[in-house]
Length: 82
Image (tube, one colour):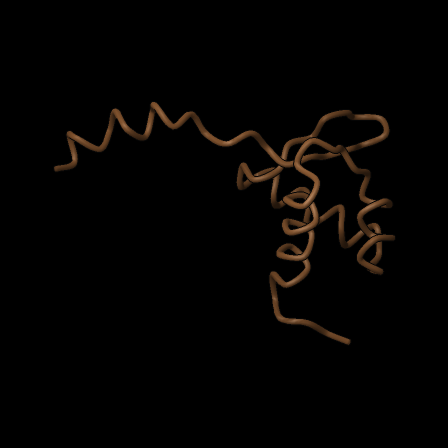
């Protein structure tokens, strides 16, 4: 069934967050979520562009959750905003 725009991206994001130290191919994620590998690959590309995921290997393409941004950088900008 059709889902709302971005719903698959959210499912893929949730899957990566459950296994933050594990790299997955689009096929592996698609199999876990019972979705097509092509659609999952598109969602992973979008998550990579957003900085949420990172590509670990190029052949075969595998992705994992991107490391959290440096907390010190955010703290440095907070005083100037006040």
